[in-house]
Length: 342
Image 1 (spheres, helix red, strand yellow):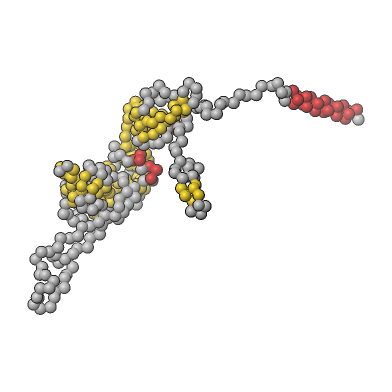
Image 2 (image 1 turned 60 degrees about the vertical axis):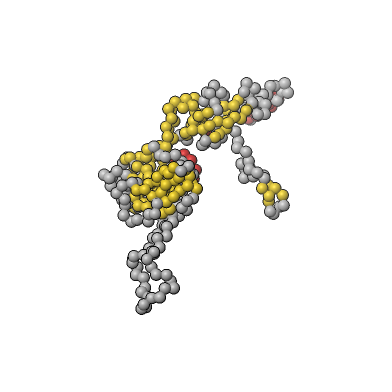
């Protein structure tokens, strides 16, 4: 009994000590951590120089007679050569159109080993440089990788190099890219020329009319055009690489390299292609948004081609892009602000 009462006394003293300690911690005179002023930047970075390689990995498949697009080399008026789509691959680069600018033509050709598939623009249409104007088919095996729209701008330039690896097959190997990565509209087939030595419709004929035979001279030939495609990369493997239709392929695509480029982390930049914005941090720790010209990106860093000299302090994260214009809400009769939050 005596030991039990002693234990209860010790427990009571412990409770009193804890309560006393809690009271001392809540002393009004104790200091609290200071808070930074609103708008103060806590994370910053300085531009550095490093090599940047813009590369991206794609998943593709081996395909027979893949369709690819050929673009206008300059802006101007496209004039097509009177040439029909063919089913036999050409044995040399073949002239199919010209783009005229200020009276000077620039030839457009389909490459050796390909077939003309169709026209992507109307004859005499005005086109811009880089716009697909011809669809062609590569004769035989090719490798096709569909491209997500989020990857389009990273692949908008011509691929400098492409390496392929067939799943559970040969590789890695160099893969020669064909045409453009832009999506292609449906290709059209020009009308065949009308014969000029036929009698007029109201002319007198001796004997019953003779029906036209399929394939007869002067008879219209129905030729299929090319189907529309999404964003895609088409390339061809070396002849010594064994290909099987439908086999999966991984492609590593390099579209650009820059040595000792001025770069920032992508988190510090608004925008990833062409023009962008960054927030500079002054001595007062406040932000100032400035415009910059962007170059290559490897997914972690982005090249700053103009707008910074390398001595600046830049805030992370970068500036927010402005929201959209207010749009009328038909149901409420008012306006709804469309911004980053949806």
